[in-house]
Length: 269
View: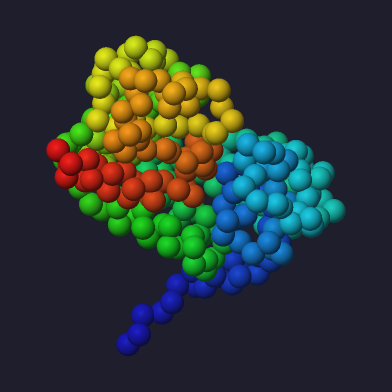
């Protein structure tokens, strides 16, 4: 006897396929829609995604840029509104009162939370090939034990910031087999690091973080004669800017790339 397909799953599937026009009230869900949903299905995203800092390509002209207010979406009449865990909650509540379907997508500050975020997104969007591929890749990587630490690394970001043990960036380094020297020095979150400290730490890998337009130690390092040897010997890795505002897009690939980088460093020793 065949097992009956649960009615609730069937209803969720029908609901997801019926959501033809989607709006977002969150920067990260903006980016997820722009990357994984057909443009004609996107009714609105936040104005932030149109700024130079976050926009990677021209936006379709029909997409309305909202500022997180419920009244902006009323005339658009979207089938689904995506909202983050904390932002735009007042607008989300008002839209629910008016009968709109609003889905809370949890924020993510670790690889495990990213997996939960992708699953939540798949639950409301339904069948989506790039989303499913990203979720399955992340789950596969998380199922593997962390690589043994065989090299050290230090992150250099905008405003002389490095990343400690409580950050997603640290988790990526650790799982890829790097000792994060900032964490080893006691940093738990963000802290400033001087160029002298970087030189004294002598990491095996410099990890640069921040946009090309940032006036940051991470970019000045390329001109410093002492640090130039890192660039000459290919001991530099650049984190994509998306990791800072929507890591679900890139975290799995970054983990893969860092793992390969650590292996290549070990092969040269």
